[in-house]
Image 1: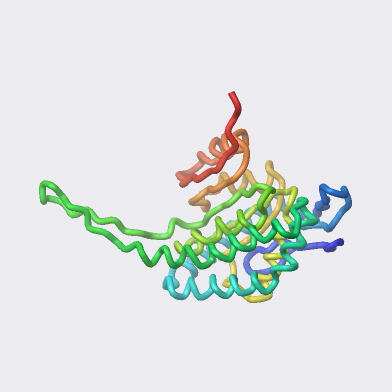
Image 2: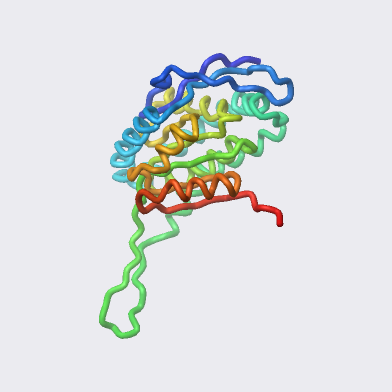
Length: 256
């Protein structure tokens, strides 16, 4: 199987890298090339950040019911294209077709679970023991989320990042593992076909020194979330200190 050339999904459009660079996707089982993807650099990442900011300004104004409706439309499209997505994972990173079902199930569930969970959380008034101040918890979307993903569960990881970000009113830039970007790029094609609101979800694979560092350093980025190694996590934290950002990480522990 060869999937040919796949473009990034940025600002609601399928796009080539501005440099024209492409990277091959290699099946680990056969070492055969199963496709090529547009490979982003710093310039592409900057475009994605600008588009994600525009998407955030639109998405945060939608009601939770409106956001949920879009998420359920995406859920339906993922179910519709399940066979294609499971096969892509099989070829890009060596999953069996059966085990790919876990990724699909997780993504489908995440697109439903998180907007429902948001309904259970409302603003709260906290008691003031001295009765001199008003303490109120107000829930607001943080802004643009950047998500760095591991190769082992390509679409499960996408689902677990999309669900909470979209439900909370945030836009998101997803950088899948450079070893297994194919299924995420196919998801970008689905999003483009269904005309998901532009800039709310963006998907690109790219270099660490160019694309990833640009995303990490940018003041547009308000939330950084990643799944990866401790070494990568430390680098991301260090690079992110150009502005205040919320950080959430799942990292491989070092053995002592």
